[in-house]
Structures are given as structure tokens and as C-alpha cells.
Image (cartoon, rainbow, N blue to C red; front, top):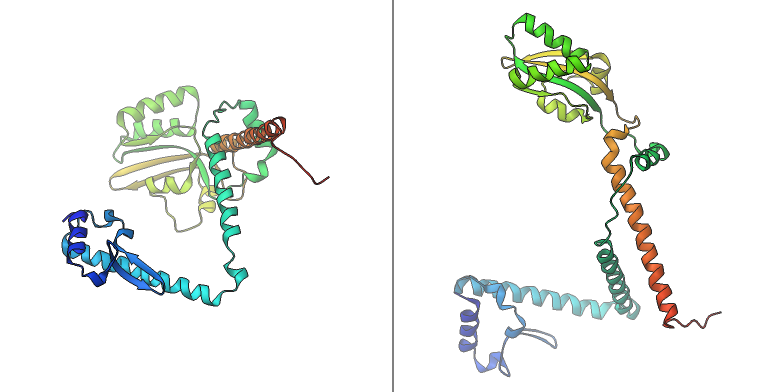
Length: 282
């Protein structure tokens, strides 16, 4: 049943005593009356007559509760406690200024950041880039555990001795014979590595990283070869490569705040120029 049909039925079925002028009365608390026309018909869209009646009863009870609470507040709060108009106006003004600056910020497009600027920011703010989690650089292969020993020995040599020739041979092998691999130089969260590689977690991550450079692990007929190129542990200074996106974001925010400050100042200066400002306090 549509909301229109339901509300029409309510009007038709209501008695004269339930009406206030041409409107159907739903409830009254003190001097306040809830009329049917105060209810948004969209609340009943797509509902059956039975569900619509239940929805209307629920809405009415909520209105009654709110009116009772408001009357209680009016009766027991002091005039100072009830004086909220100034607070509401201050809140409104803050919201308007916020929306204005958000609209300004949406037009800010200064996004080019040089490598020199990134390095300078990092060097000046190193103390703000302490790691909260362990990170690693790894070379990793997942292969059949029955890989011939001669071929395995070559791959182990490639993975533990990074150089252009070995890196090239290792990648060729990985792309043709590995079930999975990772050969990039990026820093990774160690906890993400543990989701892929079955490294024991029975002792501390920091201890494991300090005690193991190269590991071979077997699980489910697969051999995992992992070489830890480097690692950093919690509370050490994070490497710049791991923080690049954060640094870019910090620099953009600083630039944006400076740009917004300039726009605010220009707006004030424009008002002064147009004689919109008069100050009596000297």
C-alpha cells in the first residue's frame, strides 16, 4: 500500500473529534498537538496497511516521549541553562566557515612535490617517523618441494646474492617455475609477510628477524625460500621509502593550510578595501 492511500484512509476513518480543522490529530502533550500533516509520507512508502499503522504508532510514541522530555527540561532547567540560542548560533557560524573552507580546499591542486622537498621534510622530522610495527625487505619464492637439488642450489645462490645477473636469472626462474614469488625492493609489514609465508610465531618477531637471514620452510608439498634483505623493528626510525606517501600527504596539507590562510587574509583585505569593516575600539 502506498503512503498516499494509507494516509487517505486515516483521514477518511477519523472522527470529527480527531480532527483539528482539516487535519487529523494523532496525539497531544500539554499544549502541543501532533497532526497527520506533520508526518513525512515517505516513511510509509512500500509498506502494507498493517505495517503503515505500526510505523505511524511508533512515530507517534517517539514524538510523545520527546515532548515529555522537553517539557520536563523546560520546567527544571534554569534560564541560563535554557539559553542555548547563542550556542546554536555559534555552532551554525562554525559550520558555515568549515563548509566554506572545505569548498575552497576542494579547488586546491598543488600536488607536485620534488624529491629534494621529500628528503628535506624527512630529515627534519625523523623523530616523528618511529615504527609502530616491524617491517622487512624480502626476496621470496614458493616452489615444488621436490625441485631437483642442482636447480634448487642455483636458485638458493641467486636469492642470497643480489646482483644484476643473479636478479635476472632469479626472475626468469620465478616467472616460469614458481607457484608464487616476491622480488621487489619495497618495504613490507612483517605481519603481512606472515600471512603468506608459514614462519613460526612461537617466539618474538624481533628475535626471529635478528636470528634468521635466509630460511627454507616446507608446508603442503611446497618449499618456501625467504631471504631477508633488510629489516627494521618497532621504535626504530622508519626508512623514507616506507614513509613516502605519508610525507607527501603532510606536505600537501601544509601547503593547503598556507594557501587557505592566504585566501582568508585576501578576503579580509578585500573587505577593508571596500569599507565593510569599521572598528570603534582603539
